[in-house]
Length: 314
Image 1: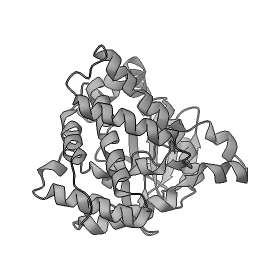
Image 2: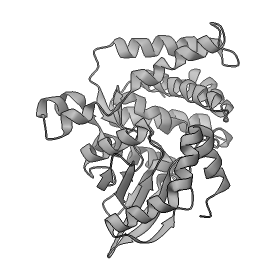
Image 3: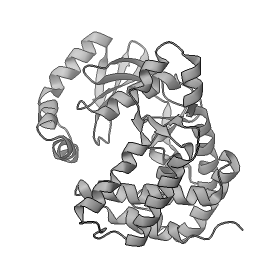
């Protein structure tokens, strides 16, 4: 298979031997999945990152085949898509939880929210989509719907992600290394307070941004949910830092970020300060993740410095 070299590096770099085995088995896996689900014309999507995805046909239906290295996040994604049930998200047609394969609805025309051109309109749309997919944990537990309660064990806990920041301190003997010490300490305090509150956790996307919101005949829908349980306001974090790598190059990015916060406040009801603090928290967490993966961590670190001092309101 003529797979992109960057995709191969990603898979091998993150997953090691398991990733190499996944790539070696990929042609046979595609053939097996095609026979199982009656797929033809299987064509890899133009951009592959950390999972294999391909457009395919099943009879007259356009679908997406997705496969990945066995990983907790893929298991959580399948569970989230099952509960979203196509409301605000692409439909999960079928899956194999043991093989980490998914057969998904192909969203048409499938244009990314990033291409809309009007950032304010894009933010309004994103807020509306977020409200469609959020599932209050309490309602899921009370409903006791078939499969719902067992699925709750599959989801990622946001608190586990932020517990990872403890390793940052351990890495630098109690310090913060190249990271801004005051901002790391601020995030540690704010996140601790947010989790200590009597908030009502929700099942959310977890990687909610312009590249994962696509147009479709059924309206704007998300793809690639992480399936995360925690305070809903965290969802604004990934959105605020995108388009990743490019936002800070925009001439009026400070005004744009302030306006985004205003719109998210208007739709979602969270205080502007809370939105800013979750944006800061996600930026620091994302920087740490990139640092540990030997990736580009400075962009989100720079965004954190920008949003930390961002004046809010009119």
